[in-house]
Image 1: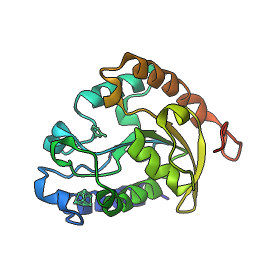
Image 2 (image 1 turned 60 degrees about the horizontal axis):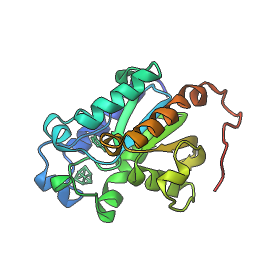
Image 3 (image 1 turned 120 degrees about the horizontal axis):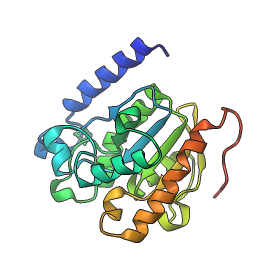
Length: 207
Ligand code: URA
Ligand code: SF4
């Protein structure tokens, strides 16, 4: 897809998300939070749902978890503007509660569409909600984050063959140094995963 076509599609999608009322979360939001960043990125990062600061600013990962995500990216030589960052659910659940199954069902077509337009090589899922959603598309059953983080899975999303690497949510690592160390280790795999030529298997794990 050409650059202009991509930009146009993403702009239209973001406008649609900002006006969306497909699930009850629209009523309590300040701003819907579409994905943000480089639409030509080979990597898309998928979090859970906006928090307080994201809801106010209308941008994903701008609070404390976002600061850690930016640091993790810098640790592998990437600025956050170089990659695309989004969430499974685009409006903040009240008091940052977990998104409900029906909210994920209502909102996830937007994530599918973002991924279809951007067509990345690698999706890094942050935390169990985005991991379960994306891996379920590949027919993988839910497993604990501790057993699957840092591994790679092949998932076909709307005709697109993608590699998925689940890791922990940065918010979970903020006050847990052990998880933070695991996140740092998982992020170290990313540059190698996106450098691999297309068609060559980079999978190291099958469920
Ligand atoms: N946590 C998320 O999952 N997403 C954000 O955008 C911010 C915090
Ligand atoms: Fe629409 Fe998603 Fe917001 Fe629900 S969470 S209102 S589906 S954008």
